[in-house]
Amino acid sequence: MDLDVLERILDGREKPTNLSFELLKNITENFSVDREIGHGGFATVYKGVLPNGNVAVKRIRNSHSINEALFYREVDSLLNIEHKNVVRFLGFCASTDQTAIQIEGSKQHIYAEVRERLLCFEYISNGSLQKYLTVCIICTRKSRYIIWI
Image 1 (cartoon, one colour):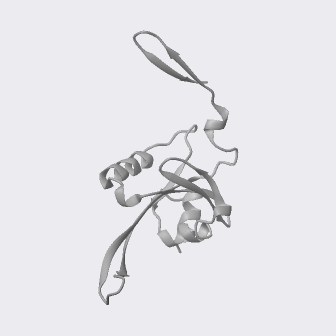
Image 2 (cartoon, rainbow, N blue to C red; image 1 turned 180 degrees about the vertical axis):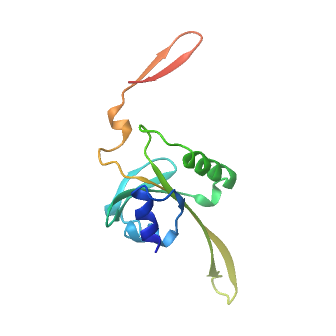
Image 3 (cartoon, rainbow, N blue to C red; image 1 turned 90 degrees about the horizontal axis):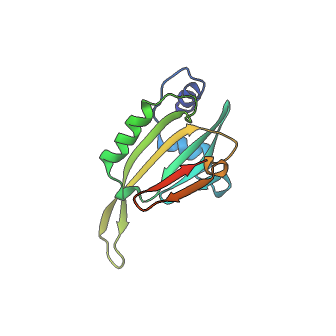
């Protein structure tokens, strides 16, 4: 069912929504290294394969340290952007689970929170925008300008 929803969003028949972690895990083959298409300082991007097309799934690393309000503010901004020059936002995942970890040499357990924060976008096959841009930095006594060409 989740797959059908994502396909309808990709086709433009539904609006972006909350997507399950299991769905995003499945379409990226458990976040396989073979599906990795990019990574940066705080996230890794994977190619998700659907029957009717592909998507890009951005998995945020160290999501336990992410400010929740900031994450939802970003999602809210992405939900409101519609422009021909901006990659289409398809949905998000904010999953939190608990796991029991046995204390070594004891029968006691500690319980840890496992948080996953992901964003899903339309897949663009021509690579990163960074590949097509050249940066020009101009410094003057009073200002520093960064120009993307």
